[in-house]
Amino acid sequence: MHNDRLNKLRSQMAARKIDAVLVTYMPNVFYLSGFTGSTAAVVVTEESSYILVDPRYSIQAREECKGTEVRDYTSGPTISAAGKLINELKPTTCGFEAGDLTVASHRLLRRTVDERIKLRSTSGLVERLRAVKDSHEIELIRRACEIVDNTFTTITREIRPGLREKDVALTIDFTMRKLGADEVGFETIAATGANSACPHHSPTNAILQFGDLLKMDYGATLDHYNADITRTICLGKPDDKQREIYQIVLDAQIRAIEAIAPGKTGREIDAVARDYITSKGYGENFGHSLGHALGIEVHDGPAFSKSSDIVLEPGMVTTVEPGIYIEGWGGIRIEDDVLVTDTGYEILTSATKEFIGI
Ligand SMILES: [Mn+2]
Image (cartoon, rainbow, N blue to C red; front, side):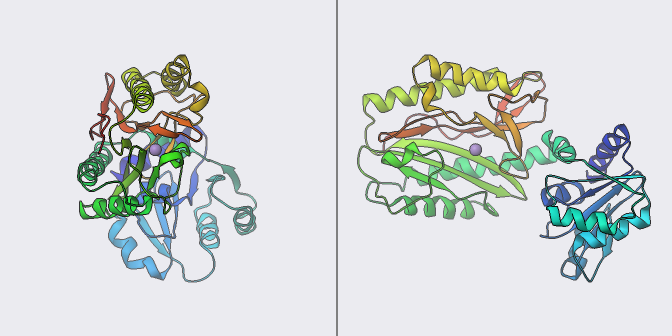
């Protein structure tokens, strides 16, 4: 598995005439080596790969990184150790992740690495490999999706007017952990009443009132892969306006999902939902992009937005999450996780999208 990934990276390196790459962004380190600790760096060459760890991780790295040679360093920053290893390997050109290194770390790297070795940014190189998931990754995302689906079924039995947003978030987090999540993927959003008009609202002491909306956006992490779901429900019987907006968001979401297929661009899929919402008069109330890639990170890379040039390929996993937000009234968002298949798409989350009134 890791060997396949390293070989894909090597063919990208060869195409760019780069004979070594220093990988410092931890999700990329994990992807290429399997290392789950907090600090390390990977160096990949045409023939070998190395992981640099400090004494906290010496044993763990040897257990986790079977295809990668573990090198221990005991003093100084990881970047100095990486620089010394690069000098030993003597590449002509070494890539580094400009999107991850601080200016200070880059200066240190340049000072440490022999001046005859060229350093060239390879930002985004590993991320592009990560965009297409292998079967092992898809299986883990599927299992994380089952957890968020089952969480929704469980919590809708427990939510009632009188609870605080914070109680809802706590119940969601507790339920995900009980159902097998290793951790929550991000701070759970539970937003009721007018608060639901903020797409990324942090739970407060606001009390769930009869007749109000409740928007919940939460994610589960399982074996380092993520699921991400949003459902909006009503605390009581939805009124006409709530029903109207809910139906527009749902129809926009379904249309966008049904348009997903290999070869389509991120911009095209975003436009399907956006144009539909605009045709119903709420274009100004859908400010964010339609969805993001999902994987080792919750925001695993770009997917669907007004400016996305991404061309869909089988194995990509993305969210599809249109919303309509009206200041003072509230907001409705519906989010599912979708796998791009050879012929189209498969929806990985299956919690009901019926407009529930509790
Ligand atoms: Mn999301």
